[in-house]
Length: 419
Image (cartoon, rainbow, N blue to C red; front, side, top):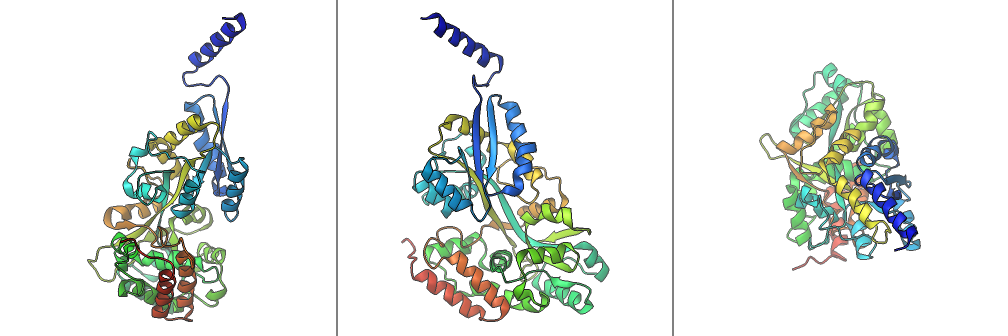
């Protein structure tokens, strides 16, 4: 053995020995993401927590604009310049990347045992045999309300449809506030915070969603038409000009204290906390009658996978195992209130509004958005069509029955349930 080689080996041993898990030379991992809003949280909280326990591994969070992420990521993957770690959208977008060989199979990754089958389903093959992203968080749907407005008008938090419309009528009659802040211009709001928010109480969550995939139920069945019929009733409560109102307009109407109720996703909590100058509360989608089982959309929203072409695969797996840990879950869920951990280990939430949303898991049955798994792979795309028809129903330009028929006809044109 040459003197140079012996010296190099001894030097390498001393470096590794003195720092435990340290690497002789720093390895840098790059994370691809669409969540630019989270840059400070990764930089100030998550990455320092990981690097402190893993000397020699540096992590860089490099987000793209949300609307450009899918195209930008695709181009980088094709060019071989994508980061080691890929932030994953749920279901088909990530499944497509896995099928193309862009995401590695991480089924046996230490830490994956920390997640339920439902949590993992958003990032698995249809047969459940391969997992390609670590589940990070879900978002929960419901309604955020202005507590000061409710107190001023003597309104109790509604739990049934009857109480919900009574509250809306009282707010409208008083005239101080717009009853509900939601517009239809951007389309997706009407479906995501409308149809998918209240719908699970009608189609009974997973029972109906899975029956739709199996072809045992149709979108023209009463339980799928009923949520559209409810949306049609919302029109008088949305304020003048809601048809031209964008998503940011709706957010502003609520946080400026001009609207009393906001059909919401829990992702709004962080922003609303910084902007609203009044006390806020939240309630789950009202049930049809007292005593009914309640269902919530607790939608698997974000995960993280391994770029199959990463030159730092082993190191990246160390990071992903940390993402699968209760330590990560606690930091992430509290740094981003409204993005709820999917880890089996309960996370203590500090934000009161986030605590309220996540408490519904204990009393309601959880499901995910009905259009996300399998049913939006063809053309016409069921998710995008549901946006359009939900807005049309609220605007009063189509009937609930006609909207449901259009969606089912579109689905029938390309989707044949597996027998």
